[in-house]
Amino acid sequence: MSTTMQQAVLRAPLDHTPQAGDFALVETARPECPEGGVLVRLSHVSMDPYVGARLRGRHMGEAAPEPLREAIPGHGVGAVEESRCAIPEGAMVHMMGAGWRDYAPALEGDVRVIAPGALSASVFLSALGMPGLTAWAGMTQLAKVTDGDVVLIDAAAGAVGGAAGQIARARGAAKVIGIAGGAEKSALVRESYGFDACIDYRAEGWRDALAEAAAGGISVHFENVSSEILTLALTHMKPYGRAVLCGLAAHYHSDAPAPGIPFGLIIGKRASLHGLVVYDFYDRWDEFLAECQPLAEAGRLVIAEDIADGLAEAPAVFERLMAGRNRGKALIAL
Ligand SMILES: NC(=O)c1ccc[n+]([C@@H]2O[C@H](COP(=O)([O-])OP(=O)(O)OC[C@H]3O[C@@H](n4cnc5c(N)ncnc54)[C@H](OP(=O)(O)O)[C@@H]3O)[C@@H](O)[C@H]2O)c1
Image (tube, rainbow, N blue to C red; front, side, top):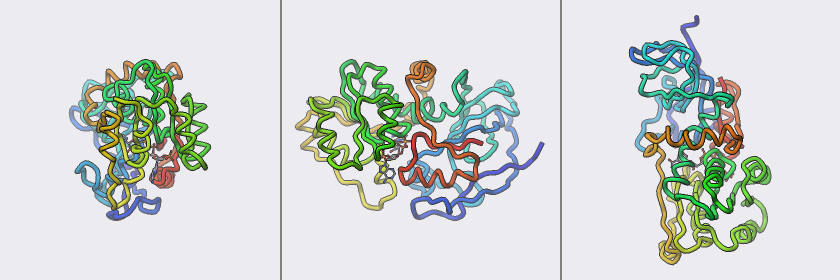
């Protein structure tokens, strides 16, 4: 068996939005299986918007990976190749500290055994992974979506937004409206994710189309993109509506602060606004999977995959993700 593996690294410290040319593939020693842990042969690794900020040392105080030495961070799934703990060899696991590389070591407490059954293991990085947990937390724990809610979600073609709409529907929402960039993404949201409507904000007259779709008012809004869209959503909100502020993808690489939200609008609408950090829900995976894995198995929770086939393709797909040009969940298949 080979004692080396490939991993993707940064070429140099970053001070700009990551582009494909900022990454390099290097051959490195394959990690050892730790005492009390496992060595995982990764089958899929996740690419997420927060990693763009993390590579610049701008995410929740977490350090950027050391250029040319440390793998680009990412969650992963794969099969246990060696075990020095109770998890059997061959078990399929999900791990946070995987990284863009072929093999990753982890202590027993840092992996979750998964049972994909007929699902692809990659689903545990999208609808049943951190993005799905984020969507579940926002819809069921913060906004507490229930029968009759009218829900608006932007970045609706992405893993978080797409899952949020489908979970809201499963919780009894009367109407789910998406906002997405472009006709192709909007069709995906309507046709594959089953939203009632999806507004393409790149199209002429989209604000009128949103007003029409939201006539009668929305009761829940889930924000992934910008304070401008959050402000617009608040104008369509019914009294006592709930908004979840999950992400600000349009502002991550800008040095200017995001424009503020008018407090008067929040008072006037008697609205509540919940900040969401998925880390707060990491101890709720079992509850999340108990609700959402049956939905995924029944085809009621599906997310398109935008897959890089091999580490060499990953930088190009990541560059697309940073520009918002991904279609569904960005992943690396190894
Ligand atoms: N709070 C938390 O704990 C937490 C956890 C996970 C994810 N998130 C956030 O949830 C959001 C969605 O995540 P995701 O993984 O599902 O990603 P995603 O939706 O696949 O990607 C972000 C989307 O934001 C939109 N966007 C608009 N302007 C953009 C710009 N200037 N640059 C890049 N993207 C832009 C694009 O969609 P359109 O073309 O449709 O506009 C893009 O596809 C992100 O903001 C992410 O940071 C938050």
